[in-house]
Image (tube, rainbow, N blue to C red; front, side, top):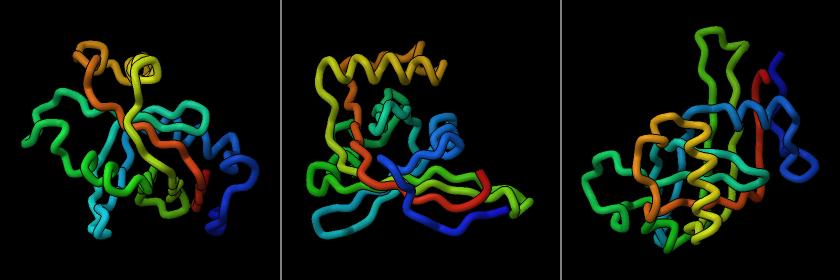
Length: 150
């Protein structure tokens, strides 16, 4: 049975099922916006730690140098971001999503090392990829909305 859309209670309102849904998801969509409110959405790999989400700008080929990527430029201009973790199914009784909002910045030194360790635990591909010195997006989550079957 699907629940109605609601603001999650207590902290970010993580029910065990919703937190597990987000924590085990392999991919999400990161939405950023420029200072002029021009939106930009990209898929990301991420890891959740307490009420913080981390995503690394890895070394997969990109058209631009990491520091010139639109998502990073937008975060510098406007730290307000959204992350959507969703599940689609042809069985519409299984549809679900969690929409997270927060303030983004770049992780620094020790926090970046910890984020890399967590990302490598979750994604085996990162174990073979040089991540040290790569930009790591840190999102301090401020709100969460959930809908669907968890």
